[in-house]
Amino acid sequence: MAKVIVDSEYLKEIDKARRELRALISNKNCAPIMLRLAWHDAGTYDVNTKTGGPNGSIRNEEEYTHGANSGLKIALDFCGNLPNALKVSLAGCCIMQGKYKTFTWPSILHGAACQSVVAVEVTGGPAINFTPGRKDSKISPREGRLPDAKKGVPHLREVFYRMGLSDKDIVALSGGHTLGRAHPERSGFDGPWTAEPLKFDNSYFQELLKGESEGLLKLPTDVALLDDPEFRRYVELYAKDQSTTCVKAWLVFIADLENSFKTDQTEAVTLDEDAFYKDYAESHKKLSELGFTPT
Ligand code: HEM
Image (cartoon, rainbow, N blue to C red):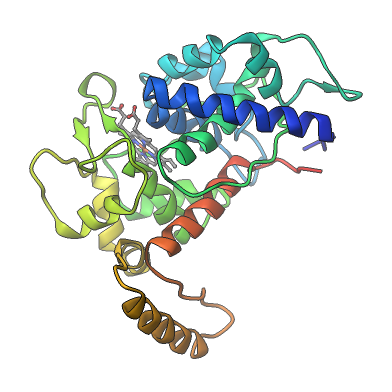
């Protein structure tokens, strides 16, 4: 993919836009759907053909009407209704010799990637390093690249490996379900995953390990994370809640010990909610940059 030059004036604008977005997203309580929009735009990436990915193509009617994207028109309209000044500063592809071109509709979807980062931040999640400068695409991938919630472990691996992502990315990103809820008229599923669906924390993993809880949802793909030992290892890690410094110090010691026995092939063990936040931030950044080479 072609490299895009991002100048410092533009970065300042993005920073300002982030601050304004924070206020807007909190006021409208739309963090979950903004996160889902950016993920569904990015999650079509195919590492072999270098097609799909976080390129704003979800704005094409052909793509937002895919069954898996049901309900996301609401989020697209939110992007379309942002104040003009904000649209311009979010338009990653509009950098021309350090000047911004006048706003055009196709450019604003790049804001979705930025908005998902802000959505995670305003709900209490980790800060995610966002690199602006994506290029828009008018070409939409064929329907069927996003995961099917009714399927299991092999399907999850097939879909996420196609994007070039790992087992750790699958589990960390599934933690995005700490936010929001399912709507019967959109997906056929109903309810939130956690008791506080506007708060980003590790409760998704805690609920998953607890099993059935009245009023809370578990998709077959969520439950699948418990079925596979490699996935489960991360679920258990991310669910850990550290209450005291003393316990934490002890666990750091154990993790260090465990890491000292690991070979180069296995990933290092880290701890608790810190581990989830750290891994989530890394995986989200990876997802938002699939097929994109920042300069
Ligand atoms: C909602 C499936 C991964 C973020 C949903 C819904 C389904 C679903 C069926 C309900 C949609 C509705 O009825 O409104 C899946 C499957 C995944 C997956 C099968 C495979 C692992 C992810 C990832 C993220 C994410 C990676 C973000 C990093 C969300 C959010 C919502 C949601 C925030 C709530 C949206 C709202 O409240 O409007 N997902 N998802 N999902 N998903 Fe996922």
